[in-house]
Amino acid sequence: MNDCLFCRILAGEIPSAKVYEDEDVYAFRDINPQAPTHILVIPKEHIGSVAELREDNRDVAAKCLVAAARIAEREGLTEGYRIVSNCGPDAGQTVKHLHFHILGGNRLTDQMG
Ligand code: AMP
Ligand code: ZN
Image 1 (cartoon, rainbow, N blue to C red):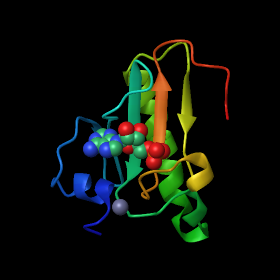
Image 2 (tube, helix red, strand yellow):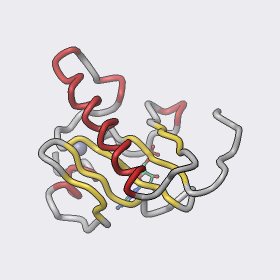
Image 3 (cartoon, rainbow, N blue to C red):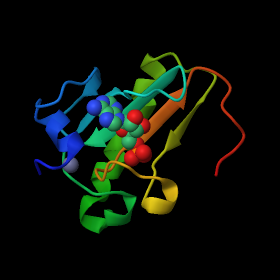
Image 4 (cartoon, protein in one colour):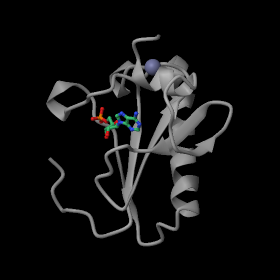
C-alpha cells in the first residue's frame, strides 16, 4: 500500500501530528485545516472509503467513530462538531483511505453540500 498516503503516514514514512492512537485507529491533525480544530480519524486497516464497508469490516468504522467522540471531548469541543467522510469524486475525496474529518472549534457553516 505504498501508494496510499495515509498508509504511508501509518508506516511513519510521512510525518503527522498525532492526536490519538489505539490498536485499530489513528488520528492526526489535517495539514490544511478547514476549522480551528480539524482532525482526521483513520483505520489502520486500508479501506478505500465508506463505499468499501461491509459486514466483515463494520467494526472498523464503529471504532473510528467512537474514537472520534473521545477525541472531540479531549479537544474540548463542548459546543459541538461535525464528522465528515467524503466518498468518491462527487464528494471530492482526495485520499482513498477511509477517513473521518472532525471539524469544530467555531460555528460551522450551515451548508452541507
Ligand atoms: P478528503 O478530501 O476528504 O479525501 O480529505 C483528505 C484530507 O487529507 C484533506 O483535508 C487534506 O488536507 C488532508 N491531508 C493531505 N495530506 C495530508 C498530510 N500529509 N497530513 C495531514 N493531512 C493531510
Ligand atoms: Zn491506505
